[in-house]
Length: 263
Image (cartoon, rainbow, N blue to C red; front, side, top):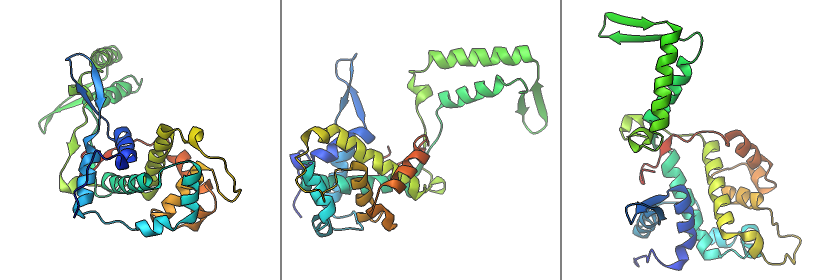
C-alpha cells in the first residue's frame, strides 16, 4: 500500500468540499479568526489509503461512464481530482446521515424557542419541584417580563460559544439514520459548492458536440445514479426529480453529525 500524500494537488477538490462542509478556524494573532484547512480531508485520505472504506461503485465504472466523463471534460473539470471528490462526498454523507450521532439544540436555541412560547397570549409557566410541589405562573405581566429578560440575555450571548455550542449525543442508543432524500439534497449541495468554487461556467470548453449536456443539475443527477445513491432510472433522463427533492428539503435543518468525523 502506497502512502497517500494528503497535500498532493490530486486531492484539491476533496479539500474544497471538506472546507465547505466541515470548516475549521484558528486565531493566530489572538484577535483575528481565520479559516484553516479542514482536518477532515486529511483524515478521509488516510482512511481511504488504509483500504477500510468500501464503495458501491468502481473507478473503472466511472471512467467508462461516457455521459459523466464527457460533461466533466466539457467543463474542463479534472477527471482524476473529481473521482476523489466523488469518493469523499459519498463517504462523508454516509457517515453523517447513516447511524449518525444526534446533535442537540444549543442553549441559545432552546432559550429563543422558550421566549417565543412565553410571548404567546395563552401561555403559562409551570415548574415542578420534586414529585408533588408545583408552581404555575399565569400573570401576563410577569410572563412578559421573564420573556424580555431571556431575550436580552440571548442577544448578549449570541457570540458566546457556551450558549451557541451544540452538544453531540454520542450514545449508541441515540444514533439515527436520516432519509435517502435528505442525503440526496445534501450531496447535491456539496457538488453545487464545488462547481461554484471551480467557477466552471468560465472554464468550460466550447461545446462542439450537441450530445454532451452542460446541465450541471443533470450531471449531479447522473452521478447520484452512478454511485447507487438512487436506483430510479428517471435520474438518467432529466433532473426534474432531483430539483423536486431540493425544493422539498431546502429549509430542513440537519441535526446529525458524522459518526467518524464528528462534524
